[in-house]
Amino acid sequence: MLAINLAINTIFIGFAIRVGEQYYFIKNHYGNPALNEIFQGFKGNYLNVVKIMLIMELKIMLWLLLLVVPGIIKAYEYSMIPCLLAENPNITTDEAFSLSKQMTTGQKMNLFVLDLSFLGWYFLGFLCFGIGALFVKPYDVAAFTEVYLILRDSVKKDECTTDIQSD
Image (cartoon, rainbow, N blue to C red; front, side, top):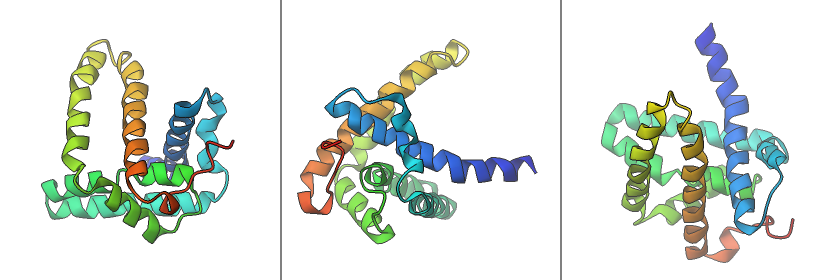
């Protein structure tokens, strides 16, 4: 029963928070956002956000069941979807997966190396009873968001529009 409750909370709350977290850090690139921006995933087209994030997680899980390495590659291929949803919660499922694939083509190894670069910081953070990891996670997400903004600019501007700058 606890596992079912945890899965439901992850789907309906965790996915929206994850998208809101990306929204916060995208806005942080342009200025100082309010902390309540983290709840942006609940605003707009909430059900579309939950649907696309659920499909993304299911696809990654199915790839991981097939083989571990292709699952990891697909996880990096789909890694831009939360950022795309943060900027445009009305994006269709096909558009989100297509744009994420375009953005990560040729960049998956670079994203993997970026993740590896934070491994030591997380290890040190967990040595302090996990408290240090609380300081590493925002740094990790901010670095990933900056990579997203660079990759977003590398694809066509009209395919990945944003209203965040005008807020």
